[in-house]
Image (cartoon, rainbow, N blue to C red; front, side, top):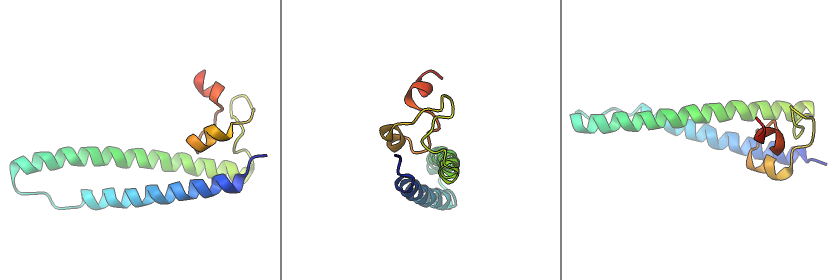
Length: 107
């Protein structure tokens, strides 16, 4: 039997990590840029990387929130495609996965 409270705890911890990361990204993006042209170009490249990190974090947050909804409605750990169980190993590796290993591979 799948321990939903265990996975809910892992998801909540991951959401907190991502929230902290998003605050760091926001802070860095809000830092004033150097007046030096060479430094400005480096800062702009850094900002692009930070924006990518922020976008990835936002996507993961959305997926984790969907996983929390599945925990609440009792469908967490059940493959959305075949209806079979999703292994503990897969759920631990990809907390938000809605698909079992086989269905994900056949996608």
